[in-house]
Image (cartoon, rainbow, N blue to C red; front, side, top):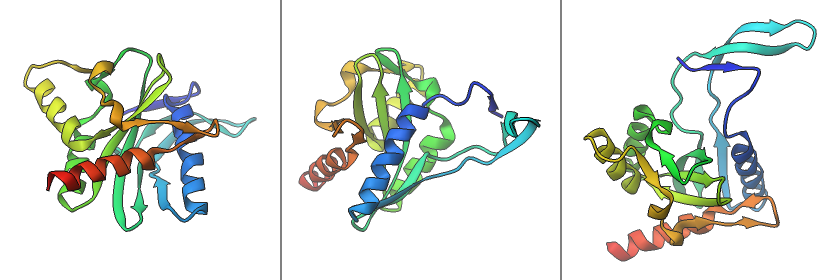
Length: 180
């Protein structure tokens, strides 16, 4: 079980950017994408501030976000790293399995990865993630180097705050259509 304490959870900045972006997408009627809440069980609550100071996750989370974009079902997880690689330890078996199942049902599953060191964001399709994840499980590299992220799937910040991932998603969908 994962634990949460008063230091909070990692990735909050990235999730806040994605949340703001999703609000904008919804306002513009481009997409309806919501944060999937992770159920927690409070253990200790500060009675003065009425805040949770210690809790544990009641169950494993699947992905961070799920929704629909112009009739296409999507799900994705947000990952951040301060290094020049994304450690595979940041990606969990149950997340990869859920995304693969989602993909088999006709949805599009992916990661949004933020390299804090470069202040760059990338769309990583489940097919690529799964290939690298399986290689790591079989004794291969235990991380995905920054250089391995495809520049055509780079996600840019617009107007200083919005993480416009729909452009990368559109590029991906065009590539998939060209392959068929």
